[in-house]
Image (cartoon, rainbow, N blue to C red; front, side, top):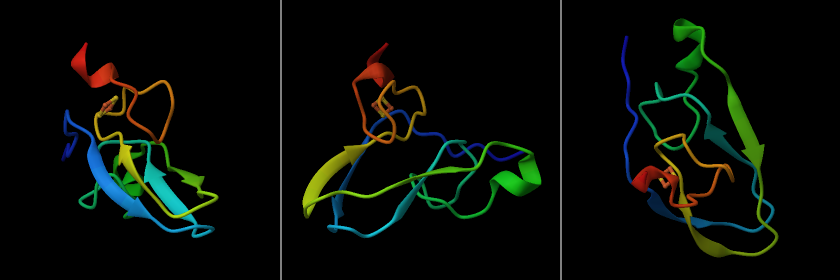
Length: 77
Ligand code: FES
């Protein structure tokens, strides 16, 4: 079983009103985004989100955040 969890956030440029799918499990080969890998691992699917303006964000890759999809520093614990 693959596990692509990484314990640091990733800085990404997000576009206003574009729909994104943050992966809630650690199996995606395209972290932190959806690639469909959860199906073969019987894991949870993605969390859809959008932003109201173009901005740069740090998205969580450790999956421990209390504010998904954004990094809240929980990876340091
Ligand atoms: S990378 Fe997950 S909380 Fe920071």
